[in-house]
Image (cartoon, rainbow over all chains, first blue to last red; front, side):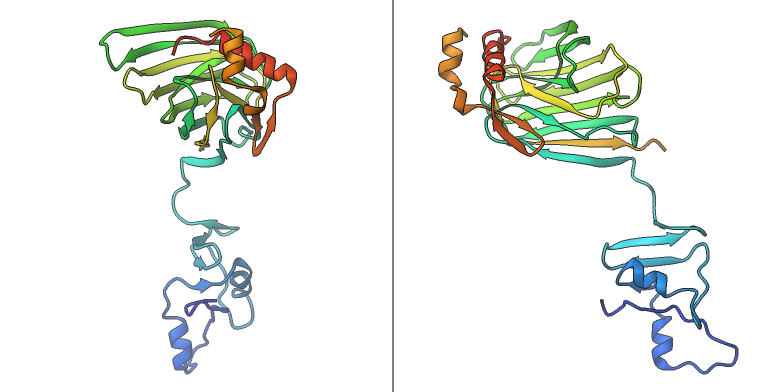
Length: 239
Length: 44
């Protein structure tokens, strides 16, 4: 318990003579508590302040500022629009990485970022949802660093989506998925760039033509293996 | 890349499958599919 932590929020009576210690206690601004347990014990007791809407409290254990809504304590401030759902470190010389429990009913839409690490070959990263190996549609633009030509790419009813670029330097993929856990078609948009002098930038979009509700996905390079790097999955807050 | 070249470049015991934090060797069927992927891989 820190020097500012308190165990009571006192209420004083008319005409009461306050001690220096009592004055110090109420001079701390937002009351500081070691845990939510000591916070809850500090209100509504004999000689304590009645807990009411608008009461703030700082919790040392979680370094969080909380406010009472009138019925519950919530973390003060705005709810983040992006929430990290899961972070998966890629192993050594793996031909594929399956990430389970990535999607749920908590969020309708997700962002997946693949970065760091290395690949054994300069190629693209592909993605499958769950165990589905058909009905992936995507198309988009591709441009190489050593040419000004913009190429178009179309994949009709394939076994996976093209979602990223990898090289012997690093992995790259910024993928948005809409509705992977809803009983609707899943939409995909992605952008990625390959760290290779003759590499490419891509921007693809597509969808998966089924209404399966997915919780997991798998990524794999079109050839070779991946080593290191991180796959981070974020949920877009629904409200 | 030919089938023989793919096997020479990626021996069975040098490549793995990862599911969450678990990295394991490939089954023979998974390795066969992996080698097929190397043979049919798009140009880099």
